Amino acid sequence: MHVEIERKFLVDSLDAVKGALPVPVRQGYLARGDGEEARVRRQGEEFTLTVKRGFGLSRAEFQIELRPEQFQELWPATEGARVTKTRYAVALPDGNTAHVDVFDERLRGLATVEVEFGSEDEAHAFGPPPWFGKEVTEDARYANRALSSADGVPA
Image (cartoon, rainbow, N blue to C red; front, side, top):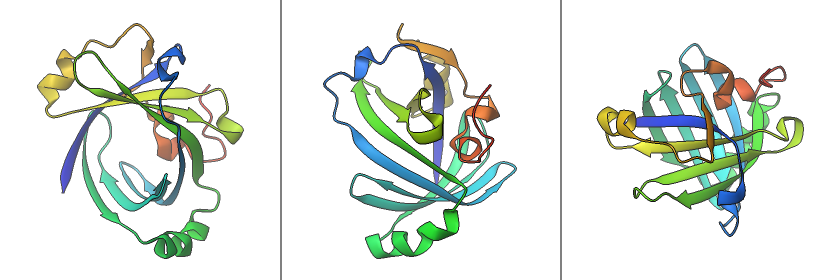
């Protein structure tokens, strides 16, 4: 088990991703419950099965790698609970990495950025750069599991 400590923001400007390598992401949910989720993801040529528990800043995360054929076997079970996006890794001046997700299809126009931290103190001390928008770490509407539903487009 790994504890994921992460803050999430909307993106005010995509200028920071210019020159960053675009990585396509297909993510589908096998289960979405109150504070729990199980998902499969293809990020570039990496395939994973991830279970997360909790919501907000800190969550328990369990992840295993899948073979491509295992991902393909599970993918149909995610019908109606998917997001597609392009992810960009952007180095920040403080040494952290910002993961910018630019959503596709019905979520086109939405872009979020996540930064993962080693501790909650580090997360609370983080000062977002000017291109980060409103913080949505605690806003359930912007969780990928919520965005994966047909009515999951934020207002």
